[in-house]
Length: 333
Image (cartoon, rainbow, N blue to C red; front, side, top):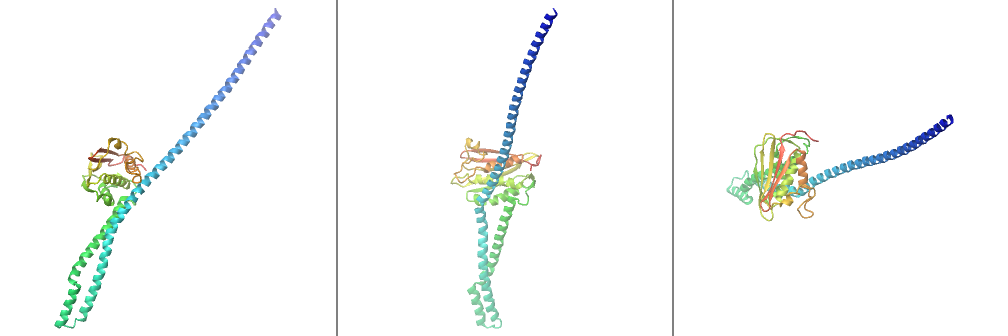
């Protein structure tokens, strides 16, 4: 009996050891599988992190490219206007130069007449007086005296115009005011109108319907860029006919103001209106538009916590309304 009991015990122990060995093998295999799964998950996680970093780097590059494109658009707008501004400056400079040449001839004539008159000061004879009278008639001294005053006044006005154009350029760019500040939108509109005058004056009349609005907290040079893009677009809306560009301003409530730029030009179809703020979209011929002007305006208005609404009808014209808060809730860099 004892031997049988020992025999049974050995068999049971052997069975238990075999079971424990199998369980150990299974646990070892399962542990290896878990380690493999963990390694695979770590690889996936590393790949996701790497992909996220690549996406962040790509987003940064896209932002940099976008900023460069916006800057390029602004430079393109300024370059487009350079010829017109040069023309506006060249006109007054031209007649000032011509007037000064004429004035120099007048002065020479006056000096010649004065020399003759001085030589005859002691001669009171009739012959002397006749000679002086003949000299005055020959040189037309009375006309030169009056015309010299007129030329000087015209030259002063020409210089004033040049000074005003330079001031408008400075106001448009706000080179000394690159920070958020309180600005008069009417002043910005007027200076921008003077800058684009050469683009508009041959195709349209401008009507100003300014309302009473307070100063607005803004980046003035960027809003001027919006006005410039809108005005240039409006000037391009007239196909072979002279039109009207109307600028309206007003206060909507105690917290916001609006600026409207409307034209009675060719208008746009609904499918075009739906895409005008898309980057690079343009209806102009190749080489005449970058397709970034309205996209730039949209981003600037968004930065100012404002919006742009557009209404357009083919054959009747287009109205852009820009709505801005008077004071920014949060000033962005």
